[in-house]
Length: 268
Image (cartoon, rainbow, N blue to C red; front, side):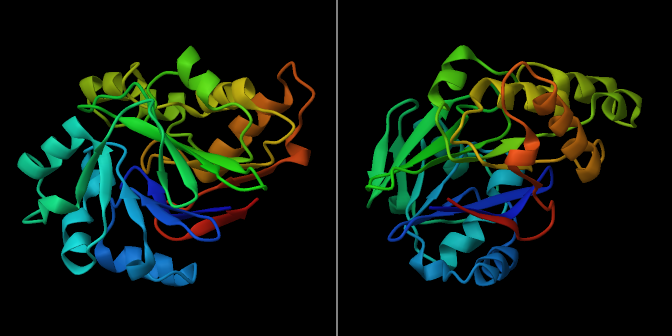
């Protein structure tokens, strides 16, 4: 199984997940051209994508969806409320509604040999989810993409145990957000329980799901204004290394995804 970041940041998100016979995109929050360039970088053909999974309707997750679908007729999977918003309220232009297939939170489904589990998350969207992927093969590999989390629930922590890899949100540095130029109501939204995880909260979350299996971790969805890759990396590294468990980042492939281009091709 492979997980690769086509782009991951507050300005646009698109993640590639694949196994030997299934290829999916999670979100299309960047332009069609950038998706095509990213897929080419990872030696993938857009026409071979088996499905697009949408986490929620915010523009940094669906900005390029309409244009992409008008060129590539790829099935789209999202919760019913998210689909309704995309088709009737989002600025995606005219799209073929027959390409959209509703899924249910906390109810798994299959695309070929890839088991996909949409998991409920806390974010200020109509019906947001993150995704866990389990390979239906003897290898039994698992990974997840978990961003826009707001807060960590016991249910989410339980659902993301025993992973081999994860791309997880490390959105902001608390002090940068506090001292930065954002208006107070936007700051409240970001650090609220329907907003985004700070670097330290990300590290704490990882400590709740870390295991002997979890060897590949990518920090994603970094804020352009309120974080730096080096700062996120070090803050999360410290949270893991000083936690009361036997794991250390020297034994983990910990990376930070690029906010603007392809990066972090993980294979497990």
